[in-house]
Image (cartoon, rainbow, N blue to C red; front, side):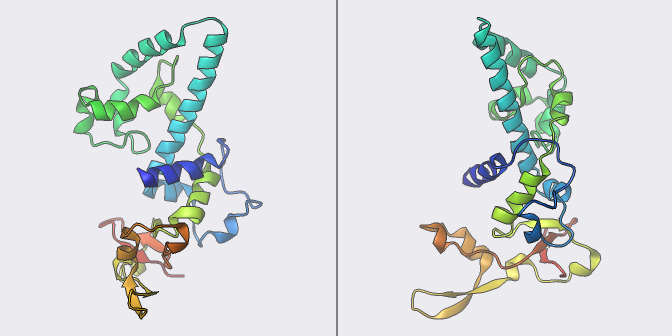
Length: 229
């Protein structure tokens, strides 16, 4: 949950809008590795898109709530009816299994309404007052700048892959093999696994050890390998 919160904070830093590519004027672009694309990074980390869509739905529903309330309507009753219709919608299975929405397995999505935890998650994708939520959700604009900024601000330091590996990179060392020099409790400089170091909670941001590597992901195994620069 802590990582999801960090994703959300970074995504909220960008304005929700249709961005076909990272603008040259964006100050983060010069810090992106060669070959970086927001679409590929989003495919590797679909939670970024999922949170972006949820934020968009929440903001849109807030506008609807304000409009209905100002007109003297009962938004709570309207939403309750809409939520019930959403839970019974035939497109709920699509929302549940879409990797950028629910992201659940087809088996779990066979009857999502039967799982309270899944429904609690999916309820955040309900556009109040919209009949075909799935189509509306697929049309939420992708903020590629915000997704790209997430890599610069958070993803790279935490060792996240930014693209798929090509065949020549599969022999490169994996992230589990990457070490960094740190001073141990005895004051001795030793090489320590970056994966193990980042598993340990730190008391403050200045104690965090950033991953020094740039990684791609093996499409077959999911393993992260150092990229060829």
